[in-house]
Image 1 (cartoon, rainbow, N blue to C red):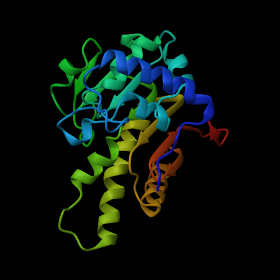
Image 2: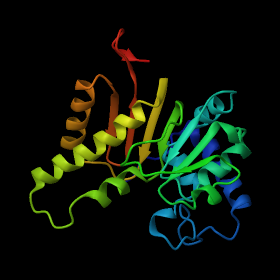
Image 3: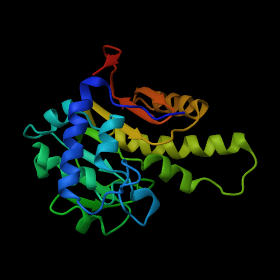
Image 4: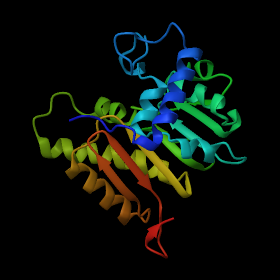
Length: 229
Protein backbone atom coordinates (compact mmCIF):
# COMPACT_ATOMS: atom_id res chain seq x y z
CA UNK A 1 0.00 0.00 0.00
CA UNK A 2 1.32 3.41 -0.96
CA UNK A 3 2.10 6.05 1.59
CA UNK A 4 0.01 9.17 1.99
CA UNK A 5 0.85 11.89 -0.54
CA UNK A 6 0.62 15.61 -0.01
CA UNK A 7 -2.65 17.19 -1.12
CA UNK A 8 -2.51 19.78 -3.87
CA UNK A 9 -2.73 22.63 -1.34
CA UNK A 10 0.50 21.48 0.31
CA UNK A 11 2.56 20.90 -2.82
CA UNK A 12 4.06 24.41 -2.98
CA UNK A 13 5.13 23.94 0.65
CA UNK A 14 6.72 20.57 -0.16
CA UNK A 15 8.56 22.16 -3.09
CA UNK A 16 9.84 24.94 -0.85
CA UNK A 17 11.13 22.35 1.63
CA UNK A 18 12.79 20.46 -1.23
CA UNK A 19 14.54 23.62 -2.40
CA UNK A 20 15.83 24.29 1.09
CA UNK A 21 17.12 20.75 1.65
CA UNK A 22 18.97 20.87 -1.64
CA UNK A 23 20.71 24.05 -0.49
CA UNK A 24 21.29 23.14 3.16
CA UNK A 25 22.25 19.50 2.70
CA UNK A 26 23.98 19.55 -0.65
CA UNK A 27 26.07 16.42 -1.07
CA UNK A 28 23.94 14.42 1.38
CA UNK A 29 20.99 13.74 -0.93
CA UNK A 30 20.64 10.45 -2.75
CA UNK A 31 20.20 10.93 -6.47
CA UNK A 32 18.73 7.46 -7.05
CA UNK A 33 16.00 7.87 -4.42
CA UNK A 34 14.54 11.40 -4.27
CA UNK A 35 13.04 10.93 -0.79
CA UNK A 36 16.23 9.74 0.90
CA UNK A 37 19.47 11.04 2.37
CA UNK A 38 22.91 9.48 2.06
CA UNK A 39 23.09 7.98 5.54
CA UNK A 40 24.75 4.77 6.63
CA UNK A 41 22.18 4.10 9.34
CA UNK A 42 19.05 2.67 7.74
CA UNK A 43 16.46 4.73 9.56
CA UNK A 44 18.17 8.10 9.26
CA UNK A 45 17.59 8.35 5.54
CA UNK A 46 14.43 10.37 5.05
CA UNK A 47 14.61 13.87 3.57
CA UNK A 48 12.70 16.76 5.12
CA UNK A 49 10.58 16.88 1.96
CA UNK A 50 9.50 13.28 2.61
CA UNK A 51 8.10 14.32 5.97
CA UNK A 52 6.43 17.37 4.44
CA UNK A 53 4.88 15.22 1.71
CA UNK A 54 3.42 12.76 4.21
CA UNK A 55 1.87 15.62 6.20
CA UNK A 56 3.98 15.12 9.31
CA UNK A 57 4.39 18.91 9.31
CA UNK A 58 2.28 21.17 7.14
CA UNK A 59 2.47 24.77 5.97
CA UNK A 60 -0.18 25.60 8.58
CA UNK A 61 1.92 23.96 11.31
CA UNK A 62 4.91 26.07 10.34
CA UNK A 63 2.80 29.24 10.46
CA UNK A 64 1.57 28.28 13.94
CA UNK A 65 5.00 27.32 15.24
CA UNK A 66 6.49 30.58 13.97
CA UNK A 67 4.46 32.47 16.56
CA UNK A 68 6.03 33.41 19.92
CA UNK A 69 5.50 30.80 22.61
CA UNK A 70 4.40 28.00 20.29
CA UNK A 71 6.37 24.77 20.62
CA UNK A 72 7.25 21.67 18.61
CA UNK A 73 8.56 18.41 20.11
CA UNK A 74 10.19 15.98 17.69
CA UNK A 75 10.74 12.51 19.19
CA UNK A 76 13.27 10.11 17.71
CA UNK A 77 14.56 12.76 15.34
CA UNK A 78 18.26 11.90 14.85
CA UNK A 79 19.94 13.51 12.93
CA UNK A 80 17.30 16.25 12.77
CA UNK A 81 17.40 17.20 9.10
CA UNK A 82 13.77 18.29 9.12
CA UNK A 83 14.08 20.20 12.36
CA UNK A 84 17.27 22.02 11.32
CA UNK A 85 15.47 23.21 8.20
CA UNK A 86 12.53 24.75 10.08
CA UNK A 87 14.26 28.01 11.11
CA UNK A 88 14.73 28.68 7.39
CA UNK A 89 10.93 28.66 7.18
CA UNK A 90 10.56 31.12 10.02
CA UNK A 91 10.23 28.86 13.07
CA UNK A 92 12.39 30.24 15.90
CA UNK A 93 14.96 27.76 17.18
CA UNK A 94 13.71 28.21 20.73
CA UNK A 95 10.28 26.92 19.65
CA UNK A 96 11.74 23.53 18.70
CA UNK A 97 12.88 20.68 20.98
CA UNK A 98 14.60 17.75 19.29
CA UNK A 99 14.98 14.41 21.08
CA UNK A 100 16.43 10.97 20.44
CA UNK A 101 17.93 8.04 22.34
CA UNK A 102 21.29 8.78 20.73
CA UNK A 103 23.30 11.16 22.96
CA UNK A 104 24.84 12.65 19.81
CA UNK A 105 21.51 14.34 19.12
CA UNK A 106 22.64 17.42 21.05
CA UNK A 107 25.52 17.95 18.61
CA UNK A 108 23.60 16.85 15.52
CA UNK A 109 20.69 19.21 16.15
CA UNK A 110 22.74 22.27 17.13
CA UNK A 111 21.92 25.11 17.39
CA UNK A 112 18.43 23.78 18.17
CA UNK A 113 17.63 22.75 21.76
CA UNK A 114 18.00 18.96 22.03
CA UNK A 115 17.68 16.25 24.63
CA UNK A 116 18.61 12.56 24.73
CA UNK A 117 16.08 10.17 26.25
CA UNK A 118 14.32 6.89 25.48
CA UNK A 119 10.65 7.31 24.55
CA UNK A 120 9.95 3.94 26.23
CA UNK A 121 11.13 5.26 29.59
CA UNK A 122 9.93 8.07 31.80
CA UNK A 123 9.93 11.28 29.81
CA UNK A 124 11.73 14.25 31.35
CA UNK A 125 9.89 17.41 32.27
CA UNK A 126 9.93 19.43 29.07
CA UNK A 127 6.76 21.48 29.33
CA UNK A 128 3.91 21.26 26.84
CA UNK A 129 3.72 21.48 23.07
CA UNK A 130 1.41 22.52 20.26
CA UNK A 131 2.73 19.86 17.91
CA UNK A 132 4.46 16.56 18.71
CA UNK A 133 5.89 14.52 15.85
CA UNK A 134 7.53 11.12 15.50
CA UNK A 135 9.46 11.24 12.18
CA UNK A 136 9.43 7.53 11.17
CA UNK A 137 10.50 6.76 14.75
CA UNK A 138 7.41 5.47 16.54
CA UNK A 139 7.10 2.33 14.43
CA UNK A 140 10.82 1.62 14.83
CA UNK A 141 10.72 2.08 18.60
CA UNK A 142 7.81 -0.35 18.90
CA UNK A 143 9.28 -2.93 16.54
CA UNK A 144 12.61 -2.95 18.35
CA UNK A 145 10.91 -3.89 21.65
CA UNK A 146 8.75 -6.73 20.33
CA UNK A 147 9.93 -10.33 20.90
CA UNK A 148 11.92 -11.59 17.93
CA UNK A 149 10.93 -15.25 18.40
CA UNK A 150 7.20 -15.08 19.08
CA UNK A 151 4.61 -17.24 17.33
CA UNK A 152 1.59 -16.11 19.34
CA UNK A 153 0.00 -13.24 17.38
CA UNK A 154 -2.39 -12.45 20.22
CA UNK A 155 0.45 -12.07 22.70
CA UNK A 156 2.38 -9.92 20.22
CA UNK A 157 -0.64 -7.65 19.74
CA UNK A 158 -1.02 -7.27 23.51
CA UNK A 159 2.64 -6.38 23.93
CA UNK A 160 2.55 -3.94 21.00
CA UNK A 161 -0.55 -2.23 22.41
CA UNK A 162 1.11 -1.97 25.82
CA UNK A 163 4.24 -0.36 24.38
CA UNK A 164 2.33 2.04 22.16
CA UNK A 165 -0.07 3.05 24.92
CA UNK A 166 2.80 3.91 27.27
CA UNK A 167 4.44 6.17 24.68
CA UNK A 168 1.27 7.92 23.54
CA UNK A 169 0.13 8.46 27.13
CA UNK A 170 3.28 10.38 27.98
CA UNK A 171 3.08 12.34 24.73
CA UNK A 172 -0.58 13.27 25.25
CA UNK A 173 0.18 14.51 28.75
CA UNK A 174 2.52 17.04 27.09
CA UNK A 175 0.14 18.07 24.33
CA UNK A 176 -1.55 21.43 24.75
CA UNK A 177 -5.28 21.94 24.17
CA UNK A 178 -5.85 22.03 20.39
CA UNK A 179 -2.48 20.33 20.01
CA UNK A 180 -1.84 17.60 17.44
CA UNK A 181 0.44 14.56 17.55
CA UNK A 182 1.53 12.91 14.31
CA UNK A 183 3.67 9.91 13.39
CA UNK A 184 4.57 8.65 9.93
CA UNK A 185 5.91 5.27 8.90
CA UNK A 186 4.28 1.82 9.13
CA UNK A 187 1.56 1.79 11.79
CA UNK A 188 0.19 -0.98 13.98
CA UNK A 189 -2.68 -3.32 13.07
CA UNK A 190 -6.16 -1.79 13.59
CA UNK A 191 -6.81 -4.25 16.44
CA UNK A 192 -3.78 -2.87 18.27
CA UNK A 193 -4.82 0.72 17.67
CA UNK A 194 -8.36 0.06 18.92
CA UNK A 195 -6.93 -1.45 22.11
CA UNK A 196 -4.64 1.56 22.57
CA UNK A 197 -7.48 4.04 22.07
CA UNK A 198 -9.70 2.17 24.54
CA UNK A 199 -7.01 2.12 27.23
CA UNK A 200 -6.23 5.82 26.82
CA UNK A 201 -9.94 6.57 26.98
CA UNK A 202 -10.23 4.61 30.25
CA UNK A 203 -7.32 6.60 31.68
CA UNK A 204 -9.11 9.89 30.98
CA UNK A 205 -7.00 11.12 28.08
CA UNK A 206 -9.89 10.76 25.61
CA UNK A 207 -7.88 11.05 22.37
CA UNK A 208 -9.27 11.44 18.88
CA UNK A 209 -7.19 9.00 16.81
CA UNK A 210 -7.00 8.62 13.04
CA UNK A 211 -4.75 5.75 12.02
CA UNK A 212 -3.87 4.89 8.44
CA UNK A 213 -1.42 2.27 7.19
CA UNK A 214 1.47 4.74 7.19
CA UNK A 215 0.20 7.64 9.27
CA UNK A 216 -1.16 8.33 12.74
CA UNK A 217 -2.84 11.52 13.95
CA UNK A 218 -3.86 11.99 17.59
CA UNK A 219 -5.62 14.98 19.12
CA UNK A 220 -6.64 15.75 22.65
CA UNK A 221 -10.36 15.94 23.24
CA UNK A 222 -12.31 18.49 25.23
CA UNK A 223 -14.16 16.21 27.62
CA UNK A 224 -16.79 18.83 28.44
CA UNK A 225 -17.82 19.28 24.82
CA UNK A 226 -16.96 15.82 23.53
CA UNK A 227 -15.16 17.29 20.53
CA UNK A 228 -11.51 17.88 19.64
CA UNK A 229 -10.16 20.90 21.51
